[in-house]
Length: 260
Image 1 (cartoon, rainbow, N blue to C red):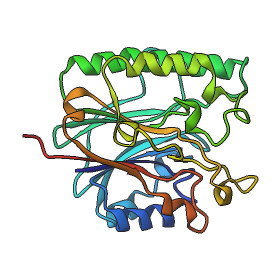
Image 2: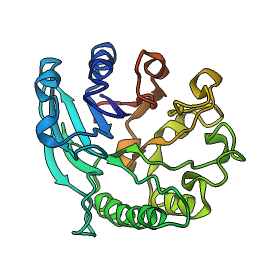
Image 3: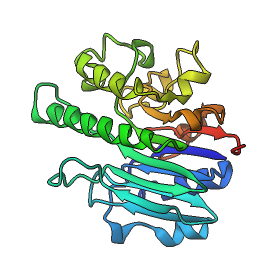
Image 4: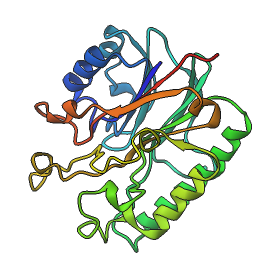
């Protein structure tokens, strides 16, 4: 089973790129973020014509998450992260496909540091930590996939000095990340590529970042112990970032063995 996460940066604007990627890579499950469109505007017919069923949690103009499954529709478990009934941001969706529990998440950016946006980021991460703990209690194969807007290590960005004031690299952000990871999750890409430094998943549109390979690694897939036992491969579809009118993210993927 091949599962991928892809911040599409506007599903309607990037629909040709999404369909191109689905046809070329044929992931069994695709977690999308930053749809930037309302539920009624999601191009469901095009996605279904490509052979995928979908569940989604849209929002006009920004945010928005979805999950696609090849040849079937994911079994929706949850829309929205628990813990704050007043949170109106569309950043979390959870579904089940072939016995695998998958979440597509779009963690808040948090910039600028020192504002309510950074406080919201940290509060959201604490809510995610609490929910992740509950998921682990199910003792199932679970994958938390998405744009985490977290740089776990200095080597996950082209220049830690240049990013020093970014919310993605702050000590509080990294501490919140570790509190989730240390519950018992395996970070798939780093687990299988422990020595690779330029393992980027995002390149800003400005300052020739793509051409200079000045990237960030902020798209992650965290696996529960049972899912981690099935992990056999992981990587980044860098080719997708180089296409015309591409998203500023590249799809990040894993391959899981069939359960014993």
